[in-house]
Length: 98
Image 1 (tube, one colour):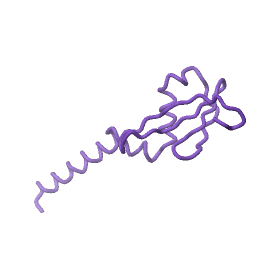
Image 2 (spheres, rainbow, N blue to C red; image 1 turned 90 degrees about the vertical axis):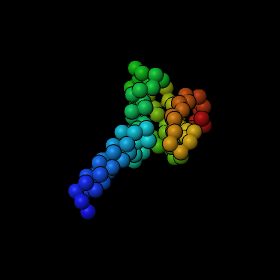
Image 3 (cartoon, rainbow, N blue to C red; image 1 turned 45 degrees about the horizontal axis):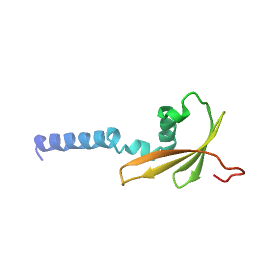
Image 4 (cartoon, rainbow, N blue to C red; image 1 turned 120 degrees about the vertical axis):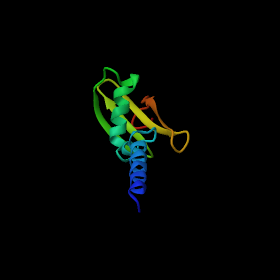
């Protein structure tokens, strides 16, 4: 292969890697779900000014978040394959029933 072909292949690989890492569907966040939850907690208004004590994974993209003041249920809701959004619910039940 000529040098021009190798250059084109190299640029293509770099572009695909950049989109996979920095694009709207970040592969790094998908593989590191705990980091994604922590980033959401930092950005969401529901958790502003509250200290998170515990993050407990409950299965099916559902987390139990315990703060000093309240407890929350955090669920990942997929509207399509690439669009997942977090929904926050305040725990109102007693004895483990939400």
